[in-house]
Image: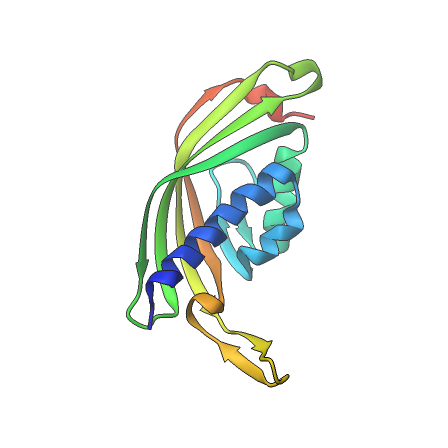
Length: 161
């Protein structure tokens, strides 16, 4: 059964996605997405199956820029089972050009429409006994993501190598 801490755990997982992109520490996406994620992004190569495909496409897309992603309005619904959730999150992503594109920006406004699943985790207690963790102490991960752009403003050329 879900509790209020589950909502905070989901918010943290979704925020971690932004930190992974902006720091270009894309291995961090393993703490956000399931290995078999079904992802749809609105740019070429954006229909992806599996976390490695997502990492490859995002790495190529963000290679030539720096970025700052921010999450805003959000609705999270944890389903009665307690181990699945839906989240819709508005975002803005500011992308800054480098080299010949220095000083140019492209800002994306949109929303992430996510399905999340709660994976069980485990840890050792003080006596060394393993205990199964559920709820917010387990691991929420995005298993399906659809990215929808509402607007893109600025120079798209900054994404080119």
